[in-house]
Image (cartoon, rainbow, N blue to C red):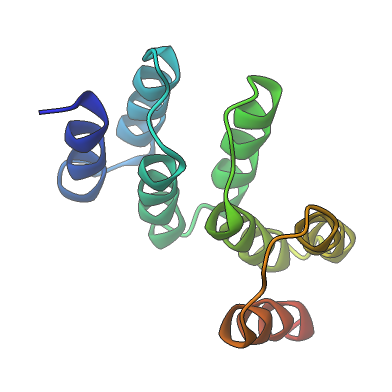
Length: 120
């Protein structure tokens, strides 16, 4: 079984606190090759459900510094966290990055992003 599959299933089942989540993130960052963006997104989703968007923002900043690739779902999670933390300029900047990179925005994804942005 691939390491990333094990990591993803661990994120959903065995992370019970923010300390466990950060330890798992550190393990994922040490893996070579890096786990997929999907695996990181699953971990971030667990942390978001703990109501800790500030930690998610910090972890995504670490991912960006280490050049770990993002996907459109990563950006959507990040926008939601910025909106929750009432950091609208950063949310708009991330939304701009999505469009600048030429990611194809489906109508449902665009609606989700605009809904998150309009709540604040």
